[in-house]
Length: 209
Image (cartoon, rainbow, N blue to C red; front, top):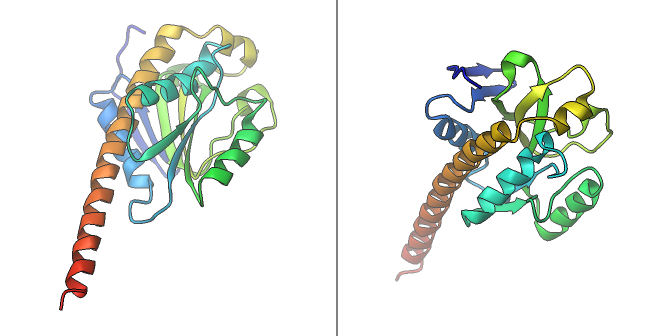
């Protein structure tokens, strides 16, 4: 894309941030952090949905792979290029995750299609992501909050459009989103660590004669 738009739009259903927006990774990280439960013991799970067999649909597993490489703290990552979560194994993976983690707080991540002028937009908000909606597949909704990246135009032959999306766009979006999530995880880990220190200090003072 030759045009680098300035796009930050807050709506009732969340925010829309263009991946080329100035400080886009910071804005994405800040929004995610504001939506996750910091003052609880719920594990934070990131489910990156998609497959590397389709360029446009590889956004999720690319994000998962970048996060795994960063050895992210505080968040659990599922869905990478090596071990993708897609239409065939999605239900099985959700059951597995819920068996491993007690009452998890899930961030659902997926690529999606939209209007031409919206390509490159990252959407973040409350409620689940609905994978497969753009290509008329019935799949379970995923997440307490969602993050979707608009990678191409909807409206006609969506499956073909996803397969023929430019990898350059998807790769750049994935890097920006992963950086944002990584920043959110650092802030979350710091807050959780500080809360644990304060709790231990208080408990120690209460038991001191």
